[in-house]
Image 1 (cartoon, rainbow, N blue to C red):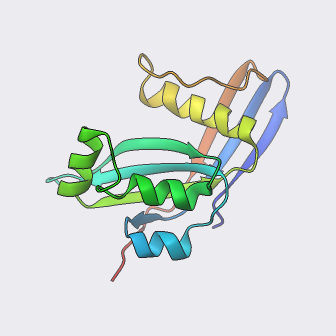
Image 2 (image 1 turned 45 degrees about the vertical axis):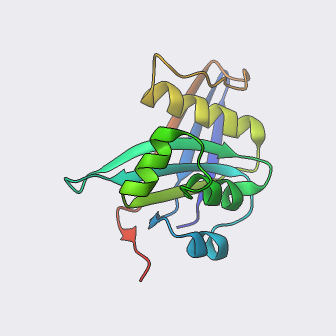
Length: 147
């Protein structure tokens, strides 16, 4: 399955389908060699002591692409946020991404995710092109590990 986004506009609304990459264990060498250097959105998860995956970061990657943003976001030595740094140091972390060539579409999708995950604290702004934004996510449940 290709990590990409499709879009259907039924004015004044928009319907996105996000096809996520497989969930991968964060490994700097795998990121450098396997993740594309194009614009998109990525999510980071950590596995807690109960073996549950917990989303702790979602971001857009425009300049520099997903590869460089993801590489920085998964390196505890480069992370400046104390909470994220601690998570990266103490837990196995995983990522997934999708490619989005349009900055406006990326803003709309990230707005939807922020409103869904953190409805009262998010500060993400949509593109303003549509009245309602709907997102359907397609992902493979299998986690790919690096051996």
